[in-house]
Amino acid sequence: MKHIISVLVENHAGVLSRISGLFSRRAFNIDSLAVGVTDDPKVSRITIIVDGNQHTVEQVEKQLNKLIDVIKVKRFDRDEHIARELVLIKVLASSEKRAEIMTVAEVTGAEIIDISLTTMTLQLADTYAHVQRLEEIVRPYGILEVVRTGTIAIQKGAEAITHKK
Image (cartoon, rainbow, N blue to C red):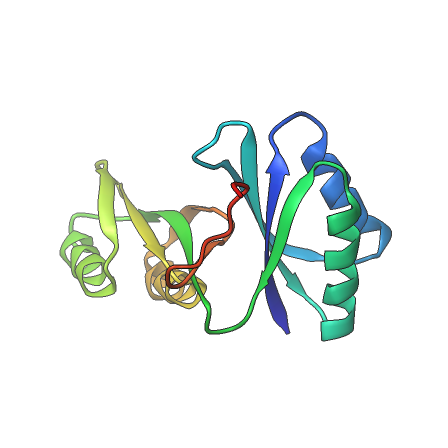
């Protein structure tokens, strides 16, 4: 089962290495990893997607909480978060196929962010499943390049994961 873990950490060198090392030492695979600063430049948020059973994820949470640079750890339950991923997909786009690709972009909610004589680049920020679906739909046109961010997630409702008291 996939689990989303949000970790607030002090924003300085070596923190990501220590966190990824923790996963590596336990032979625990990270499916997705996204890091960015928060509203406070001294604090970063790391969003980690892992596949494992409940016990293993609980152990990882406990180990994360023991790291000095970690401020807060939160594992999201299935329905308490909003998650998104960003993808950029460059596809072959002959003049005969451009209208079709533009229709695909419109129907899927993707945005066309670059056009050349032979290619189009699409952008989509959506759920993992929708990003996958766009990639499958445009594959027959010929994908030249795909760039994806890791998944980021935020808690639904008024509650917030913050370093502030």
